[in-house]
Length: 170
Image (cartoon, rainbow, N blue to C red; front, top):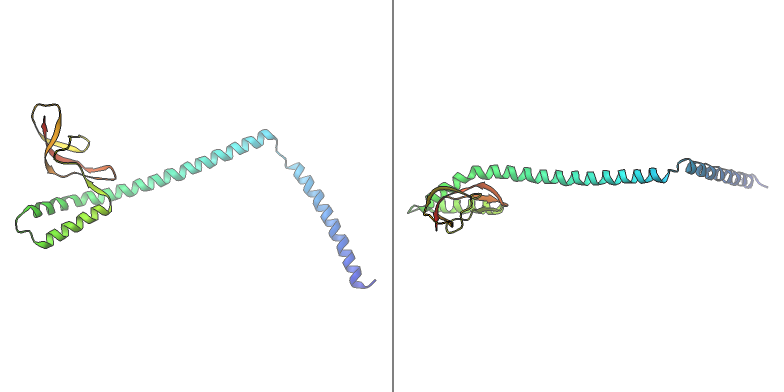
């Protein structure tokens, strides 16, 4: 037998012995690491609870992030509402320059971008959640908005500013 053949046969025997030892160790380790069924069920239950808690945390964090964004946007837009009021006063005057009209349209487009809507005005039913009554006339039970003194606005269903209105009862 040549030296190479002798080395190959020695390597083969060594690898077979090693694989036998490894398989014996693995079977011993497996038997040492078995978990009783009750403990497995508890671990599984704990894992599922932890996964559900984490999922709830992610949802809550996303909701808080969205609310924070809406709150910040609401504060910015609320500070712009007097500007819109002044544009509307200027637009109601005769001989309004075209630049004022253009700026007013740009401000309205900005509000549309962020889904800012006007609160229902004249002719709608009075709703204290959206309207601030300044004056009331009539003795009926049905309260209707007669005149809007200052427009109200909402963003995504959230009130930014109530409308200041005169109420007529029918």
